[in-house]
Image (cartoon, rainbow, N blue to C red):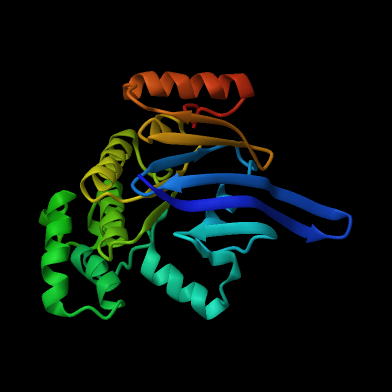
Length: 255
């Protein structure tokens, strides 16, 4: 693996004068191509703010973020839009599907917006739906399928343009336990089969146990890091729970 993302002394402040909140405080880390990295932390720890800066949705107050050597903190607004379009895929908690389009049309739309032809789109979309187990619901509308199926549609949409990074913000938050497991298995497939680099923000220890590495945030800073290595997912889950217990963090199990 080689270094893909490098975050250097990033800070994010909100407010002004004497009323300043330091959401992210001098955070530095790197992510290699093909890694599946989780970011954990209690509410207010800065994890979503960090994800928003990595996804160019929010600006850093100080510091730099590099993608393959490109400093995205120095991009102008029109450059940011292009960078996001051609490099990033998103999986949101609330799916963000268009109810007036079928499952297949929602996925095709992502490629159509990139100016791809029907000849280019057809094999990619059909192959992706087949691999993610949603080919049989291609003609159904989002309101006709389960939450887990909607989320797998969102995963397919995030992957069809082969983004360099897939960003997932609490992707299991709106799902029941069975759908959550199916989605997390889908992420594992995306990571192993499609070699997708994935960054997932979660407060849930079970979801985090699917990652290869986890960064723990507290008060806007990274205070601990775990790597799964050769451990089983159960062993890794126990390690995560141990860290959360030491810090008084939320395991997600009480939700």
